Image (tube, helix red, strand yellow):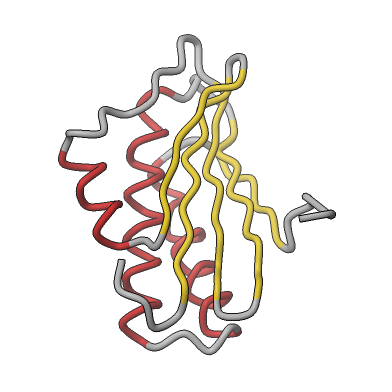
Length: 127
């Protein structure tokens, strides 16, 4: 990928009250890529779950960043926030199991003080 700039990027307060904005944006972007209704719902849930993994570690009054990368039939999403002591989620935990079931690919990483969960879904492919 030559250009690593997201097609769409949203920054919202790191507060669960704002997650509906990300769910709506996810659904709209997936619909733009002609995803099925089932794929759209899976992505909405996956983005919500990724936020649920990142939010508890986010610094108070910080931002939650959600970057969307659009490609033919694939939507990749990076959810990240600055944390005091970022820790990747347990890969044997419930949240990771749900995310794995809903996505085509899933990864997490820590870069300095930033925790990121990256997921993607390809239209028509089961998670």
